[in-house]
Amino acid sequence: MSNLFWLLLDRAIRMAGGVLVSVWVARTLGPEEFGLLNYVISLVAIFSVFSTLGLESVVVKRILSLRESDGPDSVLKAVCSTVLLRAIGSLLAIALIWLASKLMVFGGRAQLDLRLWVLIWISAGLFFQSFDSIRHHYEAAGDSRSYVLPQLTSFFLTSAGRIYLILHRASAEGFAFLIFLEALLSGIFLSIGFFSRLKEIGGMLPSKREMVLLMRESWPLALSSVATLVYTKIDGVMIGNWMGNSELGLYSAALKVSEVWYFVPTVFSTAFFPRLFLLFSNDRGAFEAKFQTLLRYLFLLSFGLSIVATIFSEEIMQFLFGVQFVTAAPVLTIHIWTSIFVFMGVASSQWYIMEGLNRLLFFRTAIGAILNVALNCVLIPRFGSRGAALATLFTQAVAALFADLAHPKSRRLYWIKISSIASCFSWLNPQRQK
Image (cartoon, rainbow, N blue to C red; front, side, top):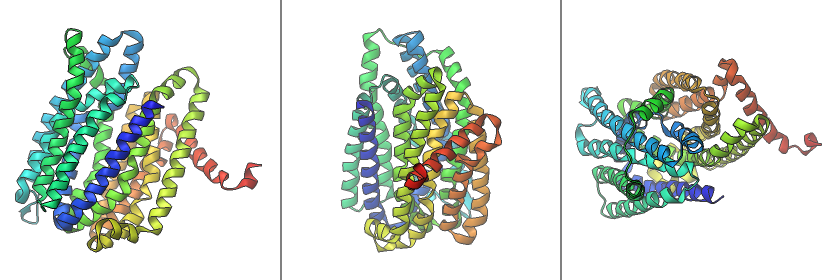
């Protein structure tokens, strides 16, 4: 319970605080500058997969296995190997981002020429995010506090900096620098405690064998992450290129509200992964019952949020962002319903990993990526940012639910999801429960 508390505290403060600061930033910059900032963020996010390499869940699973068989030294070696892999990958990501920025010239103009420092600061932060892998050591040990406090400290410091820039009406470059600074401070604070621990036991170098083992298991997840980032971030790049930064600013504002809740399935999946992993190995019936309960609660929460946001979309956008962003309300009305499938998809990814179906997970997300790009090409020119929201909603439904029907090994998961949803509506009908 303490582990879950610290995870919820971290996500709740970072997401709620981040949205409040983002709202203030959007009001300060206006749709045009806010759109530019989010254009670069979307571009960097697409290539960030070369930094993460799909290692997140694989590392936790690997550490849990090593703790039972080889002891703490092997665990530390795995963590050090992960940090090095991500550092190498981040350098590759930065190089690819710069190449993409030079090639992306639409309508006779380079999107990024006007704000070069925005790209420099945001992309450079990827290298220091490599040290975020240290948290996996604490996650596997059920000690969330040891990495939540350093991350919250860096968040509070940079949030204070953002407030300073807002009060002085700074441009997008200043806010981009603070994105870099938060990654730098978080990496430093996490490293202090971890590397002092390594020094106590005489140091620990990354293992080439461990790096090979991690990459062998994570590459399908890395490809899956590429597909996921394509269909969650490519819409921002396409809107910026085709409709302009102002339209992207409105779209990004709506997504800030819609996506603020995405920390919920991540927190619960992270907190319950060790328990589900044990049940999966020892009691399959109990595992499926526990997993179905998790899906049920996530559906109820996401469904309730979608109803509220749909009814009060205009009021929410005007209250948070001001009159100049009210026209983004239809985007929020559409996009908020993707939360149902996002919640379901995040939780079900853990099922795929425990089943060892990493390639099927990639297949599921690859379908989503291809479908999303195709739908965006059709819908954005016709409906603008609302078209992008419709494309995302349809894509998430296919990738997170209906794609499970494509293979015999994943059909069981599809019916678990359907059963979870059906049971939620049966709760609303007392007559059916008797």
